[in-house]
Image (tube, rainbow, N blue to C red; front, side, top):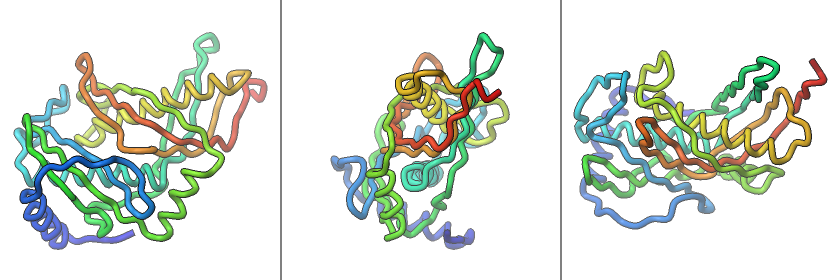
Length: 240
């Protein structure tokens, strides 16, 4: 993992802006290639976060561009490294609450040399940014395991309040809440379809298969996402 100073980050942003503002918008395919991951991020220039009051409104291009790259770095991290998870499935009749805990295995930092912008478009008060991530040999091997291992796939839509969960302190946490809820819904549906008896707890690993799609639905953030996951332990109710 790389370390970047404020000076190097500033240089990175300046170079990013000088390149991307000159790029025409193009059509791209999103997803996986042999050595490169590709995905699109959009950032609202006039974000609406409900109870969470953004410190900057409206956003300037520099701030919007930084946010787009930070969000892309998080998605690439989730695609390459994934999360470990502990899922209490919950049971209303037994008074057990449903709860999913996700922990990112490793993070790609802002300013990583493998991350670059390829195209940018400003339209309808949105910055739409296409990015590429050049995989190292080790990352290619890790991603290949996600693609070819004994894994299951699941897709779902999750929701989160525009203001994020209680205690949310950043715009990224606000959107991440909806993505984590999508992971919960995907896991629950997949386990219901594969397990004869509902387990009490499940642990394992889960990753994004591609960049999620975010939108606002009925006053909430919605995240549509596709996942790959591996269950490493199932704890039945009989064990308690």
